[in-house]
Image (cartoon, rainbow, N blue to C red; front, side, top):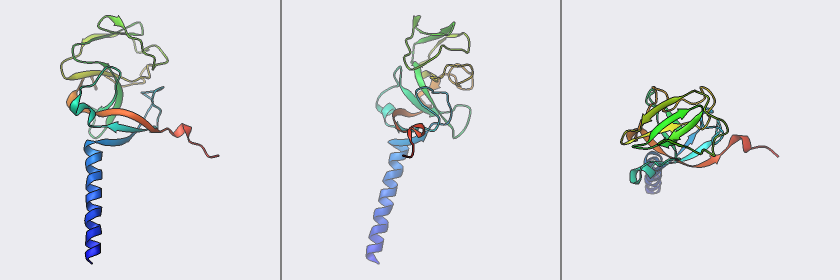
Length: 171
């Protein structure tokens, strides 16, 4: 009986450590939707670093997950386009940050949703966009339901695509 109690205790410790890592360290997440194409595909399994922004602030180009401001228990994944103090504007399908055209090697089309801004990114917030720039393809900081994302809503940084369903096949 003592052996069973010892194994139960070890099992409880392992489960507790796993839950702590999941909540505060590293998490797995599945992409649901096409707003980050071509970078991320629907069904991609991601590794999220939840500790990253405890010691550092988000940077331009980071792909982050954050709590959806308009829906409880839902997370969004987007790319950081602007940080505190930046001025973001879209003119004729081209993104500008602080008056300069932004080179975006990760997208494959111009922005089709029309002109936007200018908007100044407030302190302790980020401006995010999906990589899919086709009309209505991404609900991001351009839309009032998301807006500027406060740091406290940021869950973590996407570090790795662990698995992509489209690449798996039976031989």
